[in-house]
Image (cartoon, rainbow, N blue to C red; front, side):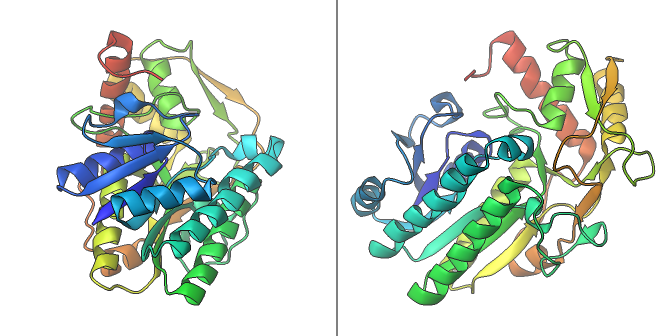
Length: 329
């Protein structure tokens, strides 16, 4: 079984590739290299610089490497950016997913794992959301992913393609062995760790007037290595004949932005400057993953379910970047 990983040279993709190789599974990566880096990948993994919307290229890769499964992570992922550039998000996240699926169906790929997002839920009726919660995305990013989910379900029903849709909550941290981590990103923990280490002059909190105990947003943070393991569990589940499934990927507990900042100051030993700015468009008060379904469906049990571990690994990765010992984009 050879797995095609789209977006495999990016942050989450590189961790999925590491998880595949650590388990002795063959894989090939396709990435347009807009945000990815070859230096995040093991030397024995083939990287093809290309567009997932190029059906002919995808078809050749499937035939050449006898691809049986696709893990589709290639996407644009910023909520504020999607509000400014909605058409680009629908083109990259929705239209290109459709083209990728067409190539998969045409060439007999039987299993597909889709990277999706908690943004498909929008503002939930209650903080803890399960997979049956109403879907009401509030940004073009969330909508583009929900449309990709719908296309995948329809393709599955029409062509017998079995799939797992993994709805990520807030992904953070780095490979514990520091083989990979986040390069350039506007993610909360990335920016905060840079502030703690003096790469940035300080950290900005966008909004402290949300309907939460301390006024800042609450999110469910998942370690990137646990998330990568969920992809491997999904592939194993599908390979064993498992039925298509949609699954939340989170720990089932939330931390506010102010709590993250406080924990990071404690762990880093640095009282870095923090400023307050207005809310960002598209942000919601709070969302936490109900994760009973993924635990029951897949052979997945998180190993790094501790926000302090997430922050320590993120800090260690940033220190490696500062020291020049980790790859840069």
